[in-house]
Length: 442
Image (cartoon, rainbow, N blue to C red; front, side, top):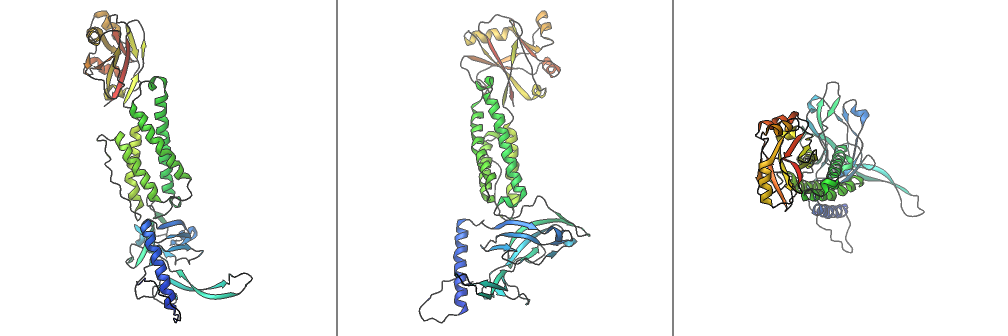
């Protein structure tokens, strides 16, 4: 299509082609600027099907507006006429439904009467237009162009059209009842047009809010606050950065899905640092305005998995109660921790580290609370411990503490599953002793 600028000069003989060419040039400039800004600024802004016609197996619009990919705006039925309703049959099952507009074609007429069999981009219709000059009531009937949109499916030849995917039909029954694919997301320029995208945004906002509450409670607890991992602080900082952004998106009157996608892949990548074993994001994110479901689905799935992992504490302290001068008892709340966690004892005392280690290895007994007195009375060994050269990274490091891992290969360890608690007995007086028992997820 020739889109060069018209050269106007004094004394020229005006023809309709001059004004038509000027329109083409203006549309060309608009389209190129639109594509330069963002090639994905097309799709539906509002989409409402006529439910009365749908009940008898016909697809038609009650209201539809937006932009085609070439920048052409449409507003049905207020400015442009509604396309002819599409009568459905069983052959339309598993078809994608499109709103279509004939492409601009060089050497072909753009507008014409609907009485012909030719396919035009604009349908010429008569319209009464009032003179807009003040105090003028003159009305003139002129011909204007109404976009000649059509409803097409995969069964049609779409090569001569610019199209917008608006729905996917799963089943069309013999009684004309229609079942839509609820997972399908129409190409839109505003997520408020599609309930599924709004629901995804709400779900992620609530997930972030829930995770932030859990992390905040974990860090502000008096006992945990003095020993919490720095990773929890930075993770909470990350969530606190994105939660207000999603809250803002929820209240925006208009939000392009690509902006939401851009924000979510950033969140996905940052969360991967904390939740993936390799600390790398492995989900490939590709945005396709024609296929929003497959654009968002892997990102949403990765975010759900990451935010579920966030709640799993890497290490949990098991409070120890001092029952006697030499015996401590702790309750393991979840029995699955017995098998799934490593247990580390942090010990501080008013002794040199080597002396503390020697005394502890020689005199400590660990066993289910029901058995500990039997072991003490009969001078039998309990579950053993081994010293660690450094503190596990999941728990706080104290320069004056010794760290010991409890050996789980002892026969008594399995009995902890059905025990009321774990007991530790130290058969030697150690000045200033302080014990912390940690369960660490593998």
